[in-house]
Length: 349
Picture (cartoon, rainbow, N blue to C red):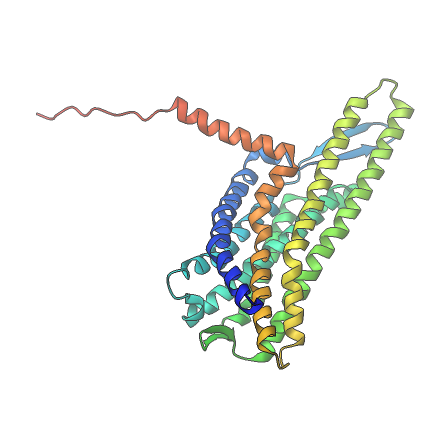
């Protein structure tokens, strides 16, 4: 069997089995993220770095509990992206795909998918920046991380990505059963906007902030050990190990997030660059088949980050796992302590 015949078969199997798997695990994971990040107990213990205050008079360690508002709103945006992006593809198993047949749905899906994807990407960048500012030694700079300012940053990100992708609504339409941009220039602008703001800048910013966090934690840990050697006589090796464990866990989570983000977005970004550069080139049938399959595969991998977000946190963070177990245990306890009570209604005479 030739490649031209094999690739469509492979693509069909991915459609039959791959998209339902993404749809089954992705929204459930996002809903669990929302449940966990919205819990007051989780905000108090799970995503914290240790902040060190060292002065001539005293030494204090304060466990920073930066609010998980960035992750909470990002999980909502991921849920929207998964539902808007995958449900029409699953629906198209047995029915005509509304994305390629209904012009209004084509416009709405493009806009909502772009808006939600860009929102959760930049909220993850904001979360990394929030972590970085919490590791700064200067107290005045740490004031930048107040909840009020965090809410403003989230609001600005949402407003920007509600407005910026709006050009897709008037300039997308269905042509020959394909949802495309009606003006080629707008399509080129969309490709470069997605490449720069969605594929290049977010992972670059996340990586830079993570490296800065790692540096600040190392400096803070050194200052902690020096102070204890000079002032305190008793050994506190156990406390040091706990602090290093928390710091290591936070750094590991950040690096895993960046790695999964790059792996999931790199094929799609490369595809956008290739499409922009070869838009007006003549292509053979073999090239068209290969491009169609690779574009489909890149789109499938693109959803990996929002699908795996909950499972990624669960595998990396022991605290995340413990808090999830508490939720499950509390639900089971509640169901055991509050059985369904059948009320008997006395007959009226």
